[in-house]
Length: 455
Image (cartoon, rainbow, N blue to C red; front, side, top):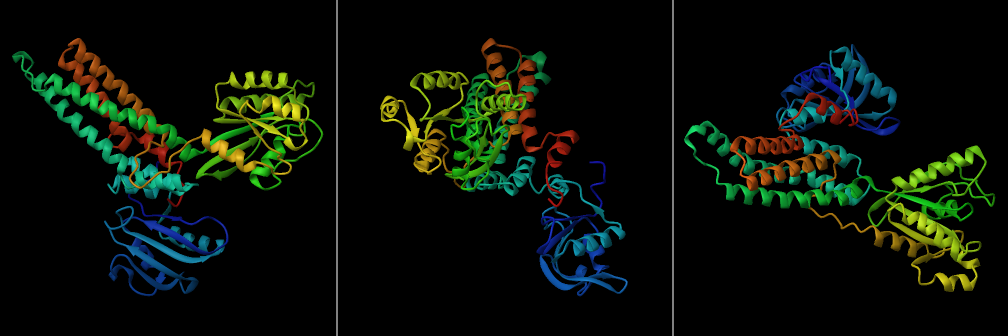
């Protein structure tokens, strides 16, 4: 971010496009002062914080719109700076004219995430909480919303800070020992340090393990629908989504690319992907689609593998299942067109953990959904639950765990305090990077660039 963080900034906080209302945000030392020059109504600088005022916005006798202006005086605002929110009618023309007026008064356009970045830099919350703001905005399920809300309220940050404080205490004692190196004194009892590190590692293990569930809650589950041509993959996708998303045809090889859409099952977002049928083909385009199918299967978290029960033999099932099983990815065997299948084949597979459906007639789809949820078990997120949902946090926790393992190994080997101090400092560094107590300009730029402009 090259622009000055002391400027007064402006951005549209609501989505672009026509709407009943739009909200324009300003933040900075002169936010209220500059709004006063364009607002016809009460003198805003004379009003108390957190009050709303009706008037008009315009300049040089030209009125642009009737508005409601909400003022927030420092430090009692989201950014801890003077801030203004202008509620106007949602015409893009009105929004553009109002923003243009402020730009003419020396205000500049906000960069992505700049409001939240200022809130972080001004001490409103730490970096982990700031990242949770973006997660909360983009939450697509109630579990994702609750996980982000828990993190934004500081549950995760409090745990990390507590771990750092305990480590800092021992680190300072070891550093003190180094100052008295010639006197052979021991301020930090090694048994107490070992017990503390092991206690912290136990907690870190629980946090690291929670990432699997947290990642599912935040990002959903990529689920590939695979099988031979004409197994009914596109029909199943349409049936699950309850819409005609994919073209359905009796002609083999109709689907030549990955078609996907998302739906919520049991509070979890599933991204279902219909893929090209798996077979050998001389058609260049279809062959490319088959290649993409195999790549999608390797990256999936779950595979729904369809068998056409009207044309599949028990030998085909064994061969194809062996190929899917070799990928090491959870899968469900789905027997499609059960209403047209022979009784002999049904009898042969009835003990092979098949889910038998008719995608065309939407038969047993609820059974399939239940099987999916049973395979992907995610507990409901409750208020106060601490889950790791952010890949950056997961990486730093893993690095902390590795550094602390070196501390334990060093204690067991009886290494000197200076080497112990080095590994403890490293673990403190990684924990500090999570909350932003230790950070860099590049890290902040990367995180906040992913935010929307008005946040």
